[in-house]
Image 1 (cartoon, rainbow, N blue to C red):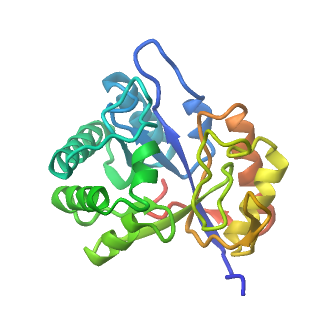
Image 2 (image 1 turned 30 degrees about the vertical axis):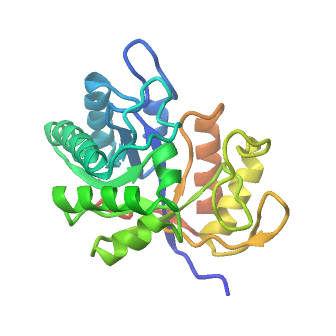
Image 3 (image 1 turned 180 degrees about the vertical axis):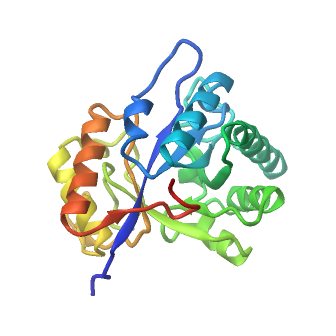
Length: 260
């Protein structure tokens, strides 16, 4: 049976520029989303971008999360790296701490952690790396919720370690029949039709089935919907998703902290 949802979080990956390079319209998206996954400088982001993104998010009442990834600026964190678990844990602590400094300067703090890109996908199944990220969050602040794919090794281990786990779904990504994300290199992995994306988002928010990439009906249960900030037309898509959710009686509210 579909679950009755009255509210859901809307998150987006933000602060993903670096130096002269800009990616996405963070300013506009921070007027739409309720949670901002801010890049911490390893796969994207730099101190200036991190500070400005935190300041804007704080001014808008948007909750800040640490978007942590592999140390891979050239690959935008989308290449798997076989990092020893101890080193990976240290890298994650470093990133959370860096962003938390800028969040605190802006009058708020980091309120959750979300892995990015290849790290996100690796720890769906990679036990050792999932354990490393869990250990890092516990060491930094065991009160921080963690965001991830439903059914992932990452969320299973985090739950066993006593962390608050938050499952998310993706507005603009295709799913496999197993409920994992279709790899970006596969045709059809990223969706582009705002109306289709909005309709899927409402179905997922209500616990209703959507079609996997092969047409199989699957149900994704989540407390947060991710809209990608680096997709073409990302702002228009996020607005359409927000408006569709509200039109179906589903309000937007962050899962961590208080808005405002």
